[in-house]
Image (tube, rainbow over all chains, first blue to last red; front, side):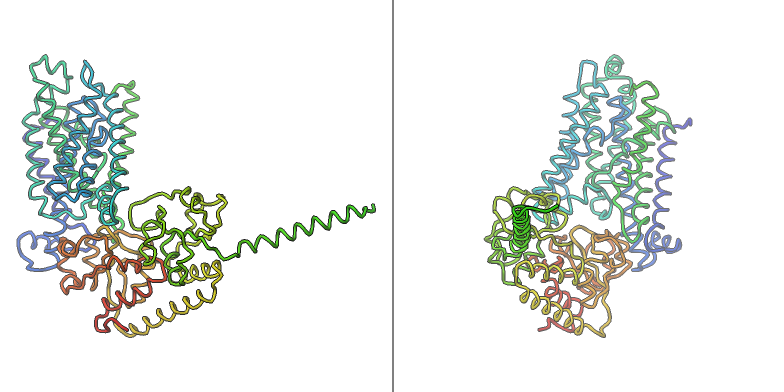
Length: 333
Length: 290
């Protein structure tokens, strides 16, 4: 599909807005459309509809869009940086490292802001560890990066287990489990006030470097020959991907596979140019998480399924399909 | 064919030996145990109420039953804290003559040469009573266990009589993390019903269903009961949309005190806890009772 980059951004924003509006009508309690419109228009006083729409479903929907957009964009950035279709925050251990930071924050009794910072530091440490181990003269061989990522992921999963084992009481343990299962149960406007603008700012920053991402996709050596200062651009892209991952983990816990699936789907729709691929990945990620969250909170109502479990159920078959496609192409990633 | 007298004597001797062995076996099993390791909170609570804690040498690590503070602690999974696998060697090292454990420890403890009283996971008062009776029989104190069972039944009947005829109160019980509650066939569900309430998660076939926030708001519980490990009340009442819940509006959100946490467990003390905590919370007009 031939679309102008601005059209992709506008279309993505419009689709997200429409989906967000549609999600306001989804829930355990049926709210008529007129009452939803009334609540959004500032009418309805202190009605149940107003509470449901403005205090519960809207922040949750915005949170889902932020989480999906952050993970979709992070996956897109990592796949460009590493030239690896299997790269994603989960596959290279970034998400687990970030999750460890968040869980450690709970254990140490950090504030929300402190936990996000710790989550970012751990995400960066995990990713740097993978890159430091797998770096060769020819850049980052995808198979080595993937194997390192799986191992670093396992390492941080073990650290998460250790922190859980050392948790003081069931309350602390429950909060850790909730984070690791992934979900948007408790999203409020308060954290979104800075998570949403930060996510948008990171995606915008990524867009500003879209041409650099295109060059990186050609390979680090080629990018260097074409005049890109890869030593500076690489860490910057990596830092952006880590920040986006830790922002997502901070409000929704560990949500697997979104960062892997979404850039592939977006590439099929808008092609490989990052000025279109990055916003499309962000928009599709947002739409996916919003859709899955609507299912998570209604399919077994009045119970609720963990969001991370559902995304994994969707993601694993896609991952297997992707591996099969790679195998059919002759094993080259 | 005629048998020789030696063959007859040998046969009779072997039979006598066999009978003696068979007779010895139950006698050894029925000997009152003096070194008990109790690996479930319900068992420790039962032993305490039977006045038999003196025979106990070790209890489950996170046991909160008064009188067990100085006993050896064994890591196990039957408590509210982090999951910790049973270290079988630490049990064997205590040389117990009886271990009381739940069936799920059979793979770890079975066939180890230890005398084990296997007890089921109790999910209602009748099952708790069954556990009390089997412990009483095994400890050779059946009259004490019968008295405890009678006390439990009398307490339950007294609670039922106190709340009889009063309107049922909608209750949301939160077990640890947000939304996690107690479904049908759990002790907490039964205690809520016994105290004259309706558990809003009571229709769920799951033991620990996770309710969505919207479902809780829709159910509009009149009383919220939080386990000691939940978020603080100030945080719970400010969850999005919860200001619409009757319990929050009327200040009827209660936390089970840490020292009273047995009310949530399948243990005999849950009935007493129900009378002391749940009944006054659900029916403040009745008061604390006697």
